Length: 239
Image (cartoon, rainbow, N blue to C red; front, side):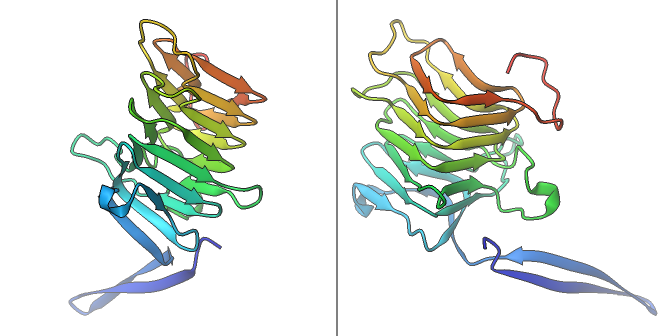
């Protein structure tokens, strides 16, 4: 279970002869806290997370160019709803190198936020998402669930490698306040290989669009479903 313990406490207030109390209830779990973290080259070219631990990401987790982050099957990642001075969500994974998610059927890797109450169980717009920038290449995400963010997967510009820049294999992206997948290209010519390739992937319930390619690009989708059924938002544009 993602919740290791349920904690109850109370705050007491004494005003004159009157004492009042406020009950506090919270789910707690043991995890590794990463705040505004850049995976430094001295850690080695490949950094592997420990699936036995839960990870709480507060702010940015940056994968630099020429560094690979491997997330094993069963790993749970929680992103805080932290915002900057302009109230923009910032907790996210920013990939300039390579991200490899090695989930398995029945033992998926989950990306979500750490609020456990019923009110937040499937509430979108709780963290920013996963972004792949121009130097990123060879990203593979298998058997993963991304939910309750602003943008599930964002990629920009060209594909510098002779294979798909981002390969989504048997994964689910759901309950995004903006986009399930957002791509920004604006290239003078189409790349020779796809910027995003997805197989057996479900993208659903996104406030703006399940998929949007700004500036064109090259994409491949096999046996994928794009659907919006949520009644929690109103959308005025095609999905």
